[in-house]
Image (cartoon, rainbow, N blue to C red):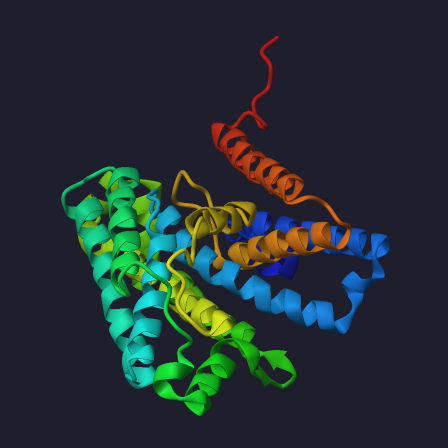
Length: 338
């Protein structure tokens, strides 16, 4: 009887990780209104559009890192894969290669990094910090080598102005229904990987590994294959971000994606994705990315120094993880013995 009378709100909150996600959304609303009251430009339509476009990069990186974090692992190679994507695709386009072919070649290279990470962590059981630290350096090195240790020329020099403009408009400057394409790209990617994580057997296996890897093995979960899939998702999302950064600049930058692996951790953790594994939903990552970008945008609007921005976001990330640790330890529910 109780199940049939359970309210929609209780059903929603019963979803594991939903409480943290909704908390992040409430925090987002409070932060946005607070900054808007300080500086009304925050509420302007133009600022909202730019905020959505900028947030999209953090959302994609957050999805990349969240998939890996839920298994109890981490991916430090994300920023380097972003740089590889930008540099490989841009270098090929400056050589006159068709943009579609150039981006596909970049995708293959990025996915190779994902496979290597998955095998090192899943099969050879290297600590994910060490394995992906290694591929981080290798990936960044490839980004440097691709164009002989220098940034590329403008992509239009190789594929022509019309094709160059089309590439840039598709990934960054163009709009659809009045909203930048970057946002729509991020939303499509979000929907695909949200479905994969929440509605498929692969998604259940990802959570199982993060909750208890030994129990997952006994249940028949292919740990190597599932771990590799999470790193492939990470590589694919990083590839998209690399293309966005390439389109934004109109060229390849060897330092593209610097520190993005940490931005991904921040977006996920703020939204309730546990770095301890087994907990978190991508709705939370969406909220976390929005909180991150709103904080950055709002602090810029009120003239806060970059150092202050980093301190504020750092404190929030540590606070979110600390709260997760306290909740998992059960300290909120423990009663003192009399």
